[in-house]
Length: 122
Image (cartoon, rainbow, N blue to C red; front, side, top):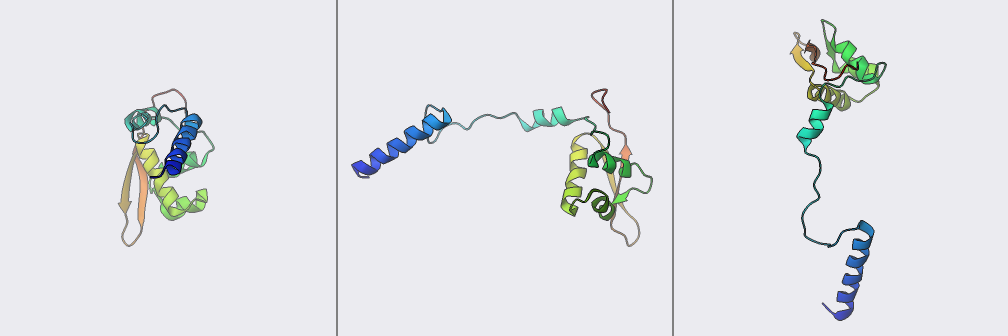
């Protein structure tokens, strides 16, 4: 590396250190973030706001016949992958969601049991 390239590299690193507030630039330890289990613990047992789309999804899941992805998408105006992701999010919050199929039909989902709420909010 020539002197001008080396000086240019040093200036870039100094500017990056100043912008980010870090003492060193380059290989170093990764910043620590809250562990995913801690984040999951915060979300567990929280009920959605009343009147929200997620509350409507829970209402549909409470029916005896359950709900299919097609009905979820038409009710919420979500794409199918978003509706399935919402079901996964509800599972992470503590909802017991079971999947079943009737003869020749697509998968349907319903709540197996009510979740244990950590807070008094509903």
